[in-house]
Length: 77
Image 1 (cartoon, one colour):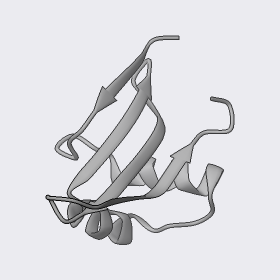
Image 2 (tube, helix red, strand yellow; image 1 turned 30 degrees about the horizontal axis):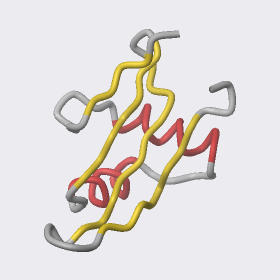
Image 3 (tube, rainbow, N blue to C red; image 1 turned 90 degrees about the vertical axis):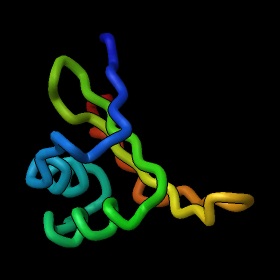
Image 4 (cartoon, rainbow, N blue to C red; image 1 turned 180 degrees about the vertical axis):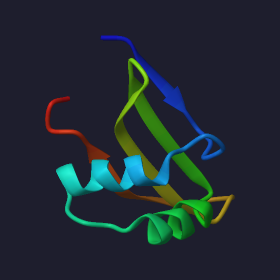
């Protein structure tokens, strides 16, 4: 299993991200996810053979502090 890591939302399928959260943490709708991830300084997405299997973001001040949040991984992974 070769996981690829992407740090941008440029090609992200928000429906796929919503499905990932539904499977791992509970329901989150795509527009809300788009807003929260767009407002986060750091974000990371894990893909296994082109399928989104993990995601997370961090709120940060850009200097000193950062807080991890919304970390989700498919139960199969």
